[in-house]
Length: 249
Image (cartoon, rainbow, N blue to C red; front, top):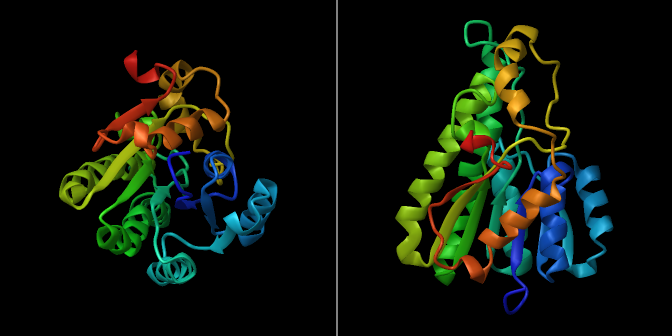
């Protein structure tokens, strides 16, 4: 842990990578806001962390402006500031090819994976600006680096998140705020929420096979924790693959 306890907000922390990230920050002594669309899952994570007053669950739909604003208001009222925001909440599309993808699937995927990080950042950046200090870590994806690692809506959203990361890093560096992104490869999570389209999967299969065996979420949590630490104080605007070498192939 770097100095006093920080106030850390992690979206999508009810399961998967988000839960592992919340655990990693709590282990370091930080106050962790476990934010998730599923409040029961968020409460379960908070109980698992056993952080007492250092861990709190919060309901949020990152794709909904009012919900994000309400979550931010609760956090800032309770703690007065936010030191770290981890934009982790995400959903996959169904791997449909662009000519076959439904408009609702496209819109929902971008709303969660791209608009969500924008809304959360917009809501919490003013506190960081006021304190002239803060860190944002966006959980992007291997799909944010190239076109053959995911479905088209997910890929477009994660490419957009990479751009948002770079823009945020540049625009707020003078305010003492850093923003970086981590790009996981294959990770053992429950992010697939709908049956995959067979044709899309078949076309992506050679690339997906190269991803290797999925790793546990704590591998990604350690990278996120590093990017938010003082050890990475001069790291800003970096898009860091955490894919076991998949992107190097």
